[in-house]
Image 1: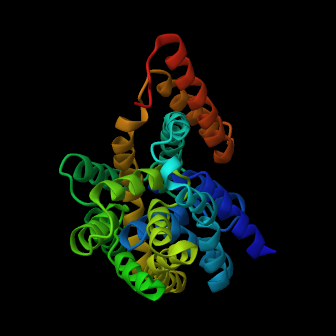
Image 2: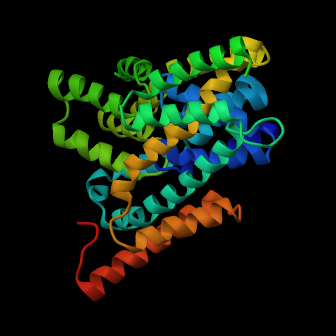
Length: 181
Length: 184
């Protein structure tokens, strides 16, 4: 039953995601509403998936599946996330010539892309609210400052994502582990 | 043939970090430049269609290439080849994460890492913005979907469907009333 739920969640996630980050809003709401993860763990999986080889969505599927139902969960979640590839993409491969530069598809994407931008913006705020809060519900200032430094490293200095995540891990050990902020 | 496709994609999958573009670069090197199985343009077509279909871009591209070489099972072989290494790595990490989650050093490191997650998504979002707003109404869609998602907890499934329908309506309107082909 759990496996079936997990599978269905990732089928939904697969069919409504269009590349990379657009998966995160639905992953986040599915994981949190089923109590498979909390907002911190969703953040962790995004970071881990960015650091390891393979597509983000499938890495999330493996992590979430493992956490919810072990190895079987991981496999079921992956197959669910790949469902559009098995079906729609296979059909497109058969009719490759016709699908090529399909106008309807381009029209649909004209509306879907801004919708994804809106949802991803929403999930950024949700995760920020969880990650920069202290245990009392206020703002955890050291976390917020570290976050701003990360933003500058990424946007202004164009440091690569894995390096920024590694840097944050190191800073986390120093700030929260050694100094104990 | 199928076994060979599996092994080639196994290797691609092992060296794909972050986005899916490195796999496209690897495919270009092997299939376009060395084996000359497909042309540059065909790879570009596979990439652009793979990207606009739902699901994982790399999975879709793997399916396209494998299907072209060896039919449905060729596609499946490429897909499973690509996910094998990432899946093993993730299973190991998840096991480790679950075991050491409450360890003070691991917890501090993860607390640091979490501060990077919103900036990482935000910076990627900035990259999406350019191609997402082709015509002014797109801004309205983005804002409306943000409000529905953030304040009203409307499911992403519905938001994507609404976006798709609005995309069709908008493009047809622009073309018929104003003679502008948005998709061109």
